[in-house]
Amino acid sequence: MRRAFLSYPFWLTIVAIVVMNYLSVSVEMTASRGYTAMYLFSTFCLSGDYLVVILFLGTIPYGKSFITDWNTQFLRFHLIRSSTDGYTWSKVITVFTSSFLSVFLGFALTLALFSTHLPFLDANFNTSVLPSFVAYADLASQSIFLVIAAQVFALSIGVAVWSVCALLISAYITNAFVALSAPVILYYVVINSVGRILPIELKMDRFMLGNYSLGNPLSTLMYTIMYCLLLAFLMGLVFNKRVRRRIDHG
Image 1 (cartoon, helix red, strand yellow):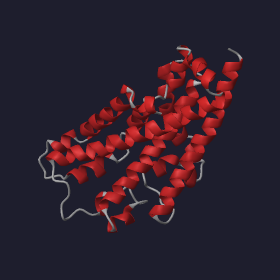
Image 2 (image 1 turned 30 degrees about the vertical axis):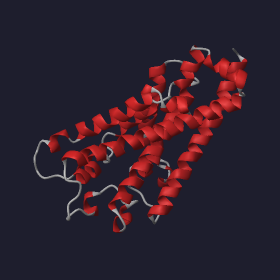
Image 3 (image 1 turned 90 degrees about the vertical axis):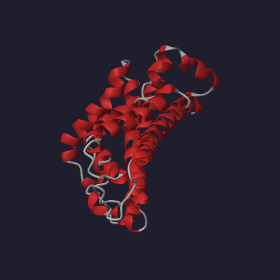
Image 4 (image 1 turned 180 degrees about the horizontal axis):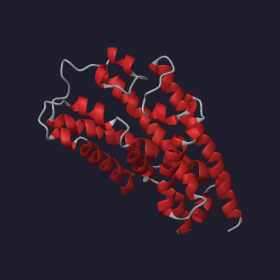
């Protein structure tokens, strides 16, 4: 775990997310219309328009780590000190956690940097500028920070699931670029084909973007967390089985 957080891909991903968020509001920042940091952040950075880019960036921290471990024989070195189960589940947890944190910290740093050269909030700010966050809009009565934090959390944990998906694919495909880009392709497939026949409660993109509510913010967020953890666990089981087979067959 420590090795993952000290690696340059983890921190590079955070920087890349900040840069991407700045690019997404570059026109608005030069328009000189008195936008606030919170308005730009909530309306553009969290709108979902760049979700595919976030998915790709979120898979970078250790999404291809199994390929690296296999090619460098680090896997066999690790198995001397641990079991196959220990290796696979530590890998799943590391990928999930590092991806979640890289996205969450990337967005948190973006908002902090926005605040250094833009007014943070004005008196007229209300939930009407959060059109897609219906799942967490009720939290605005307590604090607008809760709305943003819940939405960023949901987006981050959703990306973390797709990173575990990249890890799983890397156990089948040895090409690193394919392993990292496959979740993006699968996302399109799920959204545009499989997703059309799924009940709305199983459509991850709706929960990642906060545009579907189960009745109240807490229930929605808890459901999102449990759903994402279940998907990551199921993919971890498949990853464990695949790694075992690859070890058995050399």
